[in-house]
Every structure is written in structure tokens, then in C-alpha cells.
Length: 111
Length: 111
Image (cartoon, rainbow over all chains, first blue to last red; front, side, top):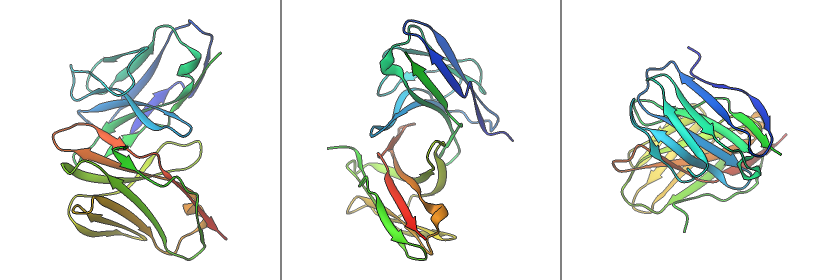
């Protein structure tokens, strides 16, 4: 099992460009999450999907959109990237005891 | 007041010592408690979780939960330099799909 996978691993964007971060899990988990992690700020929840077909805003949703494509895949889209979105992005999915398993992360720089 | 608080550290211990990491939380309705380890540049990885008051042991790791005092701790016995990382505490609130993460405590184990 690959667990949670994310693509790309690294990305550099110019201000105003758009991109989609991809996440997939092969653990048959219902719930999936997108976080960003900035130095000194900890993990902040952007969006989550409690089950296939549902999505909800987290703590910092502005500037992002998500799509729960199917049970395995949950993507995060930046429509018009801003320097404030420079961060490390983690996708996670939830096991049966509500424990979360994280992907390897995407390091995004917006110039 | 943050919902989940951790001392940022660094906590420095000599090799072979017991490292004690603490976490307090504000919501008395919190049900489940998780400890993650995060190496620099890597994603968080689950160490263990605990639901009931008392101790739960897994190898060199022991989680301790005291719901009356609203704290959870992680003890690492026989600390090794490879344990040097940031340790994140996370809390699940009642009837929520979300985990609330603390900002983490950085642990340094001196050879």
C-alpha cells in the first residue's frame, strides 16, 4: 500500500498563476483533509471532506477550492496564487480510530 | 487561548534519558488524543493515540491522559538522537471529523 500520495513534490508559481495539487489514498478511508504548514504556525486546516461527495471549509479556506473526485482522490486548487500561499501543503486521510495519515507534502513557492 | 497548547521548546535531553512532552487542551468535550512525530522537511507520522484516562504504552513510548486536568503527555524512554524531531499533539473534539493540532515541541537528544 502506498498510503497517501501527493503530486507534485515541489512547485514554483508566479503571482496570479493557478495550479491543482493532487492527493490520493489507497486505504479506503472516508475522510480526507488539506492542511498548510508554515513556520511557527503549525498545521492549519484548509478544507476537508468527511465523505465522498461532501466538502467543508476549515480554518483558512480563502483562496482555495477543493474537489473530492471519488473516494480515493481529493484535490486542492489555487485559482490565482499569491505570495501568502507560499507554504508546505499536506493531504491526510482518516483511519477508523480518527487517526490521520499524512502524505509526503508539496512545497509551494509563489513569487 | 489556543485550543491545543504545547511548549515550543527546544527540549534538550541527553541520550538514554526520558523525554517528557506535554500538551494541554481547552475543550472538555475532547475525546481522542494523538501524538505525531515530524522530522525536519518531512510529513507528520503517527506515534500513538489514547482515549481513556491513564497510561498507554507502545515500545519506548508512553502516552498519559488526564481528562480532569485536560492534559496529555508523551514519554519517550531511552531517548536516542534519532528521536530528535518536532512532536505534535492533536485532539479530536466530540462529534467532529477534525483534529486540532498544537504547534509542536522540538526535541533535541544530545549524544
